[in-house]
Image (cartoon, rainbow, N blue to C red; front, side):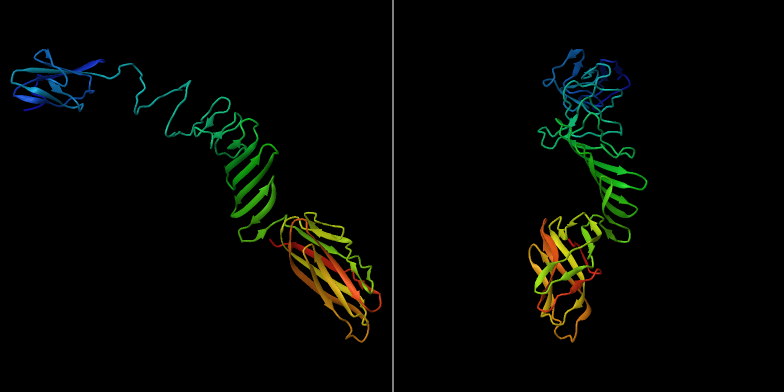
Length: 357
């Protein structure tokens, strides 16, 4: 029968060793019920120390196999030693440390799990990929976190030598979810904000675009202009004259000046002329009205020769969809071919346009 035999077996424990005594009652080569560190165990058979690997095999930490069987009446003593017996030693696997740990060198880890406390450092600690290709540098006046008291500087991506760069800020508050892109060099920032089921884009606090909870899209800075004629301009028979505009009702972006609209960005623009001519001459061959852009001229003409007299007023609307590059211009002209002079551009005439996309 193998293992622990009889009540004479005992375990004596101390801070340095564990000893287990086997009083053998029947022939056996197996000693079980042990707990030892491989390579740190001694076996004594009737007081004679046996040789590890020759007289016995101890490789699994829980049992020992004798090469020559012990017989009834023999005594086998197994003494095992701990691998390290220094108080408060740091285990190589598992275990819990309380208090602070100071490391003068480099700490390498395959993963880091925190409990919510801060990861701090002196100067500019960094989380690096060992090659600085995608390093995240935390400057000494910044922190990584989520907060609501200061929306600037929660997470910084900066040039460690100049301190300039961009900052991304996730903010969670009772009524706002916001991601901020901040340039600490210019102090300008851009917000992507979800608030009360509406989506907002902001630059330094100024709204650039909003989609509200009903699906309406507003763009306060979309280029738009609306101008009116002075009401005293006359068309000279036999030539062309450019429209002049004395009243600027609306000019978002400040792109209209000196009777000309200048496209601020490349895109497609809607341009509309609502024209009223007073005293249209029936002896004129035709009137030709144009919206002229840098790329092409858009024309609309009519002939009054079917009239039996001078017409007091003639009103028409002209709309074009113009492909314009940034810096291209748009203006209006009218020409009277033949007939007598005296046709006037009425003050109700208006010219307006906006960026479609």
